[in-house]
Image 1 (cartoon, rainbow, N blue to C red):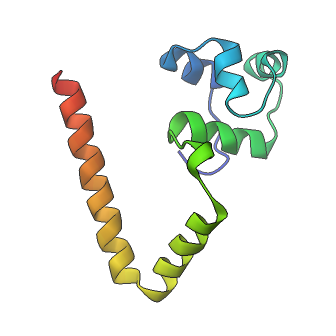
Image 2: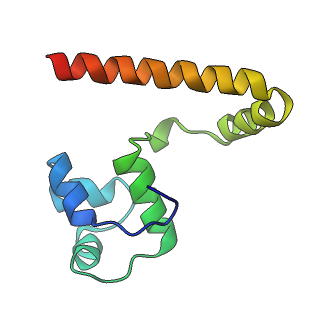
Image 3: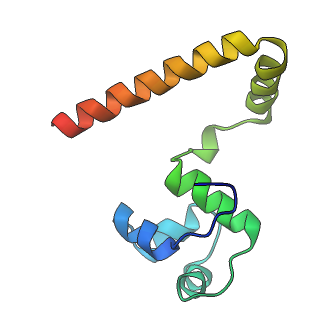
Length: 104
């Protein structure tokens, strides 16, 4: 899913098995505001991006720090081979964990 791509928040929420309050408060939106977005009101780009990060990409925003982004940018710029190697390792680990969860 691309940056700011259109998607159906109700569908994502229902797929995750969350009620509106649980779903929307994770990204700082009230239940009533989320209800309006689910009914078709245009979502601002920052809200769409937060929704994507938290509910689609499963990023725990409480664990993300500015320094993490600085380190990431440093690795990409100064050590691209190491960045690619680490990225492949994380993807492999994620794929392995996903395969295990489907076996059980």
